[in-house]
Image 1 (cartoon, rainbow, N blue to C red):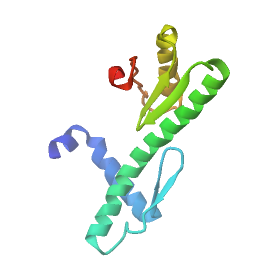
Image 2: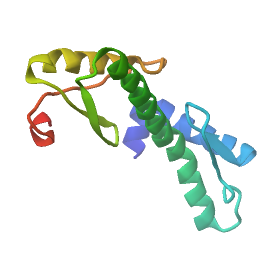
Image 3: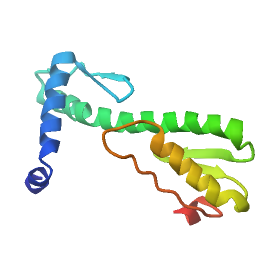
Length: 141
């Protein structure tokens, strides 16, 4: 871990800052404002406090990823309803979306879905989506 923190110096600062904020506010937020309340963040019991500290670090990252994929799904659903009624969003798995479309339109659909996913939220760094085509989910990986 020391090598990791030495290479990525901002990570330790993030972890320290988020824990300090959580100890003061007793909650953390995702990018879209959802809150996780951390009742044990100042607990006298070390195990409970450490669990709350881990949650304070993980929840904004994991929760924000969930926020982003849900927002992308809403944006894509609107696009499909208005412009691509023959394309079906059939499944979400973590940060992946799976679509069904005709083979003839597959490349165009792939590029459009990638574009929408990358533009769903504006961040300080680029949000890169990967896309693939296959006859089934396994082939698309």
